[in-house]
Length: 350
Image 1: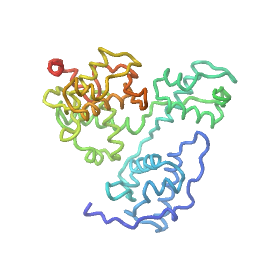
Image 2: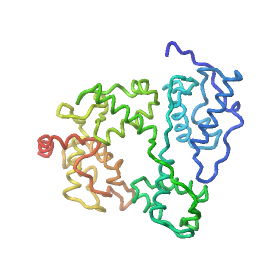
Image 3: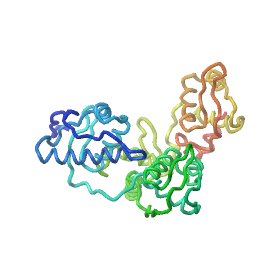
Image 4: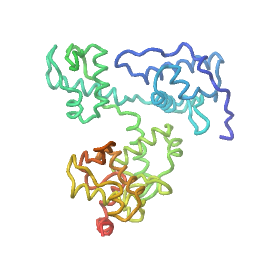
């Protein structure tokens, strides 16, 4: 950063006209991105702003436009991936036009889902004015999260393909085409590039460069790299570890030591699988701590692994406690590699 001199901070009051309204089902992020791209380009041409001038903070822009900070975060991420801005911790997001960034035609997850839902409706041969399946049922059928399917359905409503009648959705028109959905999201594209790099440059058990280094290598935001690594972790290509371990290419994990709470997560996983069913109330944190001779803090961190993945839920009040929502599989992302080493698991259970 020594070679970069950060300019002045741009005020939100300078950024008119701005996005101020959204139609039902409209993609807020895309609309704000297009507006900011246009505003930045015109402001640079007229000399109103300069390279390395700071954009307003996420909180300021979110309030100015009337959206959440999360929405603005996604906007900044897309602008960074397009080579228009750059974000640095403790500094902010500043204008940095990178002419070397090559953009590809990519589709967002919602855009892909819109086409998949249209294909689903087409395959089911629904007739005009007939009720289609619920968003939850469609989500289950096409294996896409409910919230994403719901947004896609609202997009189809906004475009007149569907209409909402009470809580139901009815086919309003068969006059639509299903686009080719072979294009990928940016995260999937970057994940593919990282996976290619791993196969060409690294060996099993070797450590990947940091997310910041990968960000520079693949001309993507740190957030995009993070999501790409998460995708590769789900595929079993890499294993992400906290602390000094970093992200490691999949292979034998016998040389990697588990954190203490992860060891007890293995015990709790086995307890749930062997002694519980969906809806059961688990022993208290204090009971688990006594049972396994460890601290309550360690047990709480272990349980949080299952809570984050939706296998258990915490409930407060007189009849509260920790309840089983689903039975975890043999392994989990945080300790999946243990499935490769049954001898180590047997030692933990002793």
